[in-house]
Length: 198
Image (cartoon, rainbow, N blue to C red; front, side):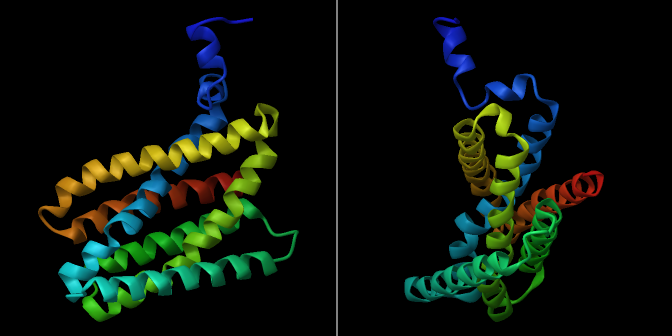
């Protein structure tokens, strides 16, 4: 059995990426999509302040609205037939999320705030289907490892957007949303192509 550094590498959530080409593709697609999601999560409050003039109370109400729409999105996802293609639905949800982020680049304050609230639905829809599909498709690597990989991707995306978004937000928070749109849109397009091949 491997010892020392070799054992640490073989036991990490990133180890399967070394040998599995499809898992590496998933890592890149999910990383791009999560960058779009975290651009919204991390910078929507700043958008509400700079573009809509909201106070902390207003931000709290927008966050509550977004959480409610996420609950609705999760409920709707659970109502879909079991025969639905999870990857295709996830790709469509990711595309809707990217479109919503794109609207935040151009919409004025009130409409943008409404969009932020409604974006919870596609975000929840994508999150409802990707883990289940990953769990089924890559079960050979172990459930704990593949779920840990998704968590690791989310953490990496948070760091990446914190660094890139922090710099862009010094110029304009809409630029952060533009970056999120590109990341989520590219991921949605690639995910749709993968779903069609499936």
